[in-house]
Image (tube, one colour):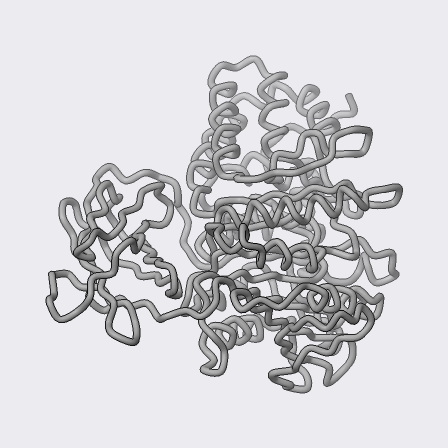
Amino acid sequence: MRVVISALLVTLTLVIVVGCGGGGGGGVTPQTIGSLAGYIYAEPGSAMIASDRARVDLTPLINAVVTVRGQQISAITDANGQFLLDGVYTGSRQFYIECDGYARSSFSMDIAEGPNTIPSSVSLEPAALKWMVMVYMAADNNLDYDGFAAQDLNEMEMAANSPDVTTLVLADLYGANNTRLYRMEQDGDPANVTSPVIYNPGELNTGDTATLGWFVNYCQTDPDLPRAEHYMLVLWDHGSGWSSYDDRSITLRAIGVDDSSGGDIMRIIEIPPVLTQPYPIDIVATDACLMNQLEVAYEWKACADYLVASEELTPGEGFDYTAILTMMTSSEGLQMSSGQMANSLAETVYSVWENDYGPGSPPPVISAVDLPNLGPVQDALDAFSRRLISVGGNYGTQLSRVYDNVDSFSYWFDDHRVDLYDYADRVSAVINDSSLDNAAGQLKTAINNAVTASYHIDNGPGESPGAHGLSIYLPQKVAYNRDAAGSYPGLMLSADTKWNEWLASQPDYVDP
């Protein structure tokens, strides 16, 4: 949720962008490995295709890159179009093939121990764009009638046009019959939105996950739109990360509130199925508050490569889209990998927020998270939680002090969101247990490896000196049992770690 002083703020939507696909249990390293081999060819005048054997009727594609999701390994095709990817974990794995001039392709296959060959059904479509930016602007609420939707649309129009980057915006504005799909173009007019409307459905319910799925699919497959090498999805609305303030209400665990559709919203756990699209999404960015929580990132971990979001509240103005699109269309931006773009996006947003920071503004905090690299975080959090369950009951006073002093985010709600790294660091400092200290160290290392960029201001009281890029839900025991015991265990993070058991069994808070 953005910070907007409005009577609707507390009762209205909060967003959570979460999860796309992927089952639990990520991060446990298989004990056996295999390899993947094959050839990649350029079919004359059309697609790139893969083959499990050499062919003389097609032109080898040189320097195509084959990677496996969740592992830091890759292979590059040689002069014959051949590649060999060694060290692939066995089991069901997801692979990417990418090459300049083609839309990145994704395929999954079961890897057996020893040699494996690529399926010949894999192909890549030629791409006319480097990046397509897809903005899902769920503004049928106070963010439009307070003027922020128009402001951001005009910011997009202030950026120069580029043949390499296209921005499409599904803008659901306040009121009935007020949804439009724009293809943004520069107009130099900061007060009026003049970009062409390429589709006018009249009214769509942006609180329905089907609308989100339709939008992304339309952007990626409509024959009148160009394909892109890379895709970024921006979810634009209020936000709250995981907030289980009241089991009887789902409004604090969702994104995309739609006032014209009876206040409908997309719940966090409803989003995963609709983000299974023809082309992989490189980056999901949330122009909303409190979204870089581990509960959110972990739920989302199979849906994109990177999540760019804030642990803290964000200003009502949200992202500066002129600055973002100018960065993306620069010569340097067009050469960036997905990971470099995610980091640069976080840096660009932060620099504007830091410059505008002043009294009444939330501290600027934003980070980029490598979603396939969350497995080690899950493993480490599980070990840390298990050890806390074993020894934490003897340290009620010390843990209460940690609760009071750990870097936390948002003053709007009773839910306690804290920086996970800072919490592990403080807990290990007050509990004299070598096993816990080791588990905390492993957790901090895993967080540092998964968070590829983290920006925060730490020069005074009320700032965020302990922000390391990922927050987590840490209520007092009584609040957890009252507000979250019926819903929090349904998260993927709860299925794969003992964190929720720790929240339920932690010692009662005592005023230190």
